[in-house]
Length: 181
Image (tube, rainbow, N blue to C red; front, side, top):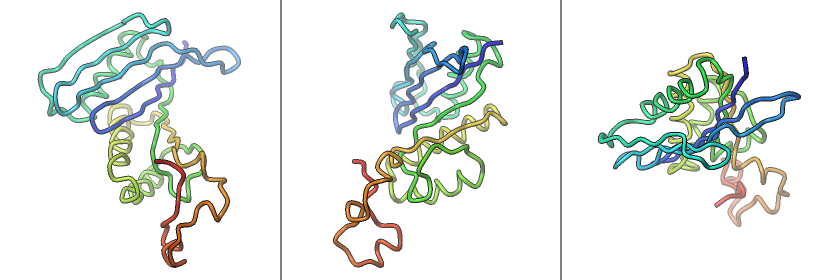
């Protein structure tokens, strides 16, 4: 059976996704992409194939549904479109990995707790990124999930580039430049 990897970018009002088929030699081919937008107001789903051809569109009347409901709908659509059991892993864009997470990491309860503690550093994004991870874990327990961090790209910047012109005790408490926004 072929295998698919689901990539998610969850925000406050949308969940963007891309679905890749794992091919020979671990090659990845885009199978579908799209988004659920308007979460909290007038949610709508749209998926297209690699050529941009519309595969599915849907609207919901209830704007109060949570990420878990929409991700359940998305995973259900993928399984009905691609076949049940094809999703073998999920990857998530996570805004903040802090100083500890400098590369993609397999998510477990410890990682999720550490990422939750970073919420004050990205309060508009981090909660939604983590909500998607929790939702996928609830929908498909045991599915491997990997977090990839916006902050990882700039992690090799020199010490001077990471410092603010503040007393060193602020830096020791984690206040520094992380290289985004």
